[in-house]
Length: 218
Image (tube, rainbow, N blue to C red; front, side):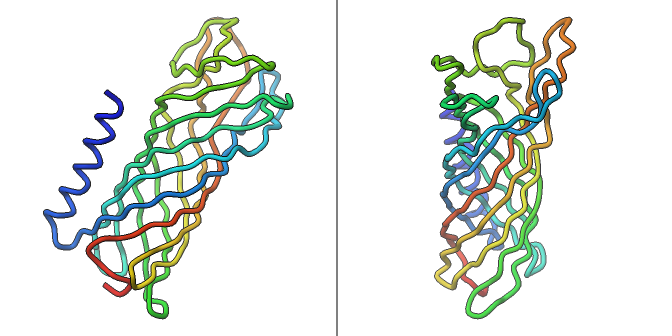
């Protein structure tokens, strides 16, 4: 079902681009360097390390008033952290379907365009794996958890802010670097638990992509 939803969203993006002459389609993929930041049950800052992941997907870009554009996309993105809670070897790998909503400024620069963008994103957890205390455990997305649950539990809905910059060549092949800040606390609620734990996704990535229907100087 989740795979069908992802495919349907991709098809909808392509159909939108075909329907409007001022809309182009972009595809991109790249690497993520992600972390899970926040604090533990005692309120102490988490000391996790960056985890390597990837992202891939597509977007439609709508010309608002050149050089200003609006992008709506859908990505499959992996996130997580290594050496979580200060334990060497423990790690969390998370999988999300992510929907970025970006405002982009693309002034002409040389033969192509500079890319400067920002905006919010929405994401929904669809899978993952974890190693806790040296044991393989499941990743569970839930709004509420029980005391003593051995799984790594997170709220499924995430949201935050993206900031990115890059360069679009006349081809129009493009490269960009983005930073991402999760704004929602992903720690599920526990009945009768006064824990101060807070966890949020953060990180950055590098993408390469190709845009159909336009060039560096559209």
